[in-house]
Amino acid sequence: MERLDGQVAIVTGASRGIGRAVAKELADYGASVVVNYNQSKDQADALVKQITADGSQAIAVRADVGQPDDAKALIETAIKEYERIDILVNNAGVNRDKTLRRMASEEWDEVIRTDLNSAFYCSSAAIPHMIEAKYGRIINMSSIIGQMGNVGQSNYAAAKAGLIAFTKSAAQELARYNITVNAMCPGFIETDMVLALSDEVKESLIAKIPLGRFGKPEEVATFIRYLVTEGQWITGQQLNPNGGMYMY
Ligand SMILES: NC(=O)c1ccc[n+]([C@@H]2O[C@H](COP(=O)([O-])OP(=O)(O)OC[C@H]3O[C@@H](n4cnc5c(N)ncnc54)[C@H](OP(=O)(O)O)[C@@H]3O)[C@@H](O)[C@H]2O)c1
Image 1: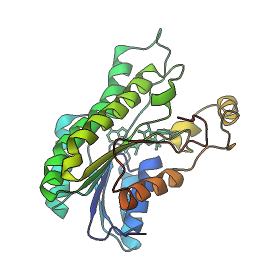
Image 2: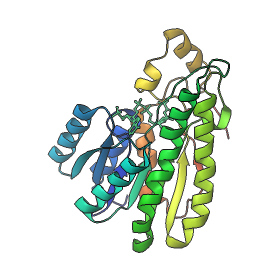
Image 3: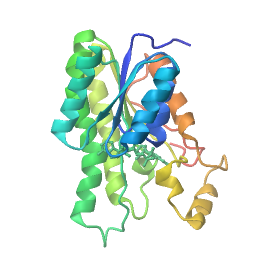
C-alpha cells in the first residue's frame, strides 16, 4: 500500500466522529494533516497531540467552513504552513432534523450552508493549488440519505444529494489536471450524530442493515485512505460503505 509521506491533507470537521478518524488514518499513512474544527477546540488539539506523538505532523485550525471567508482562510493557513494541498476531505456536516411541515428556513439554510456550500467554498479555494501541482484528491462526505431520502431530513438529503451532483461536475472539470473528486456515501456510522438517536430508532435502523450493525468511523476512514492511495482511476463516483442498507 502506497504511503502519503510528503503529502498534505485538509480534513474539515476533524475534531470528532468520521472526520477525526479520517485525519488519524491519513496521518498514520504519513500525511501532514490540517485538523479543522469549529467548536470543539479541545478535541481538535487532543487529536493534533496524538498525531504528533505518533510521528506525523498536524495543526488544528478553527474555521466555520459554511462561511466563505473562514473557508478561504483555512486553505490559506494550510498553504502558509505546508506550502501544498494534496488531499481535501470536505467532511464537516450538521443535521437539523424536522419534518417539512415544521422546518424553519434557518434550519434549512444552516444545513445547506454547512453540508453543501462548505464543499464549494473549500474546493474552490484549494483547486488553484492542486491545478498548479497537477495532482489532487477531493472527497466529499455525502450520505446514504442523499441517495435514499429520509423522513425529517429534507434539508440534509438535499444537501447530501447536492454534494453528489457537485462531485460529478467537479470530477469532469478537474480530471484533466489529474484531480479526482469522489463522494463518500456512508450508511449509519457510530458517531455523536447517530448515538444521539433514541434506542428505539437505533434498533429499527439496525434491523434495516443487512450486515446487522452500524458502521465504525474507522471503516469509512480506511475506505477514504484507499481511495487516496490507490484510486488514481476512480473519479466522479459514489462510494457506499453502508452495511448493505442501500444497494445503489
Ligand atoms: N454518522 C453517520 O451516520 C453519517 C452517515 C453519513 C454521512 N455522515 C456525514 O459525515 C460527516 C461527519 O459526520 P459525523 O457523524 O462524524 O458527525 P459528528 O460526530 O457530529 O461530527 C461533526 C463534525 O463536523 C464539524 N462541524 C460541524 N459544523 C462545522 C462547521 N460549520 N465548520 C467546521 N466544522 C464543522 C464538527 O466540528 P466541531 O465539533 O468542532 O464544531 C465535528 O468535527 C458529516 O458530513 C455527516 O453528514 C455521517
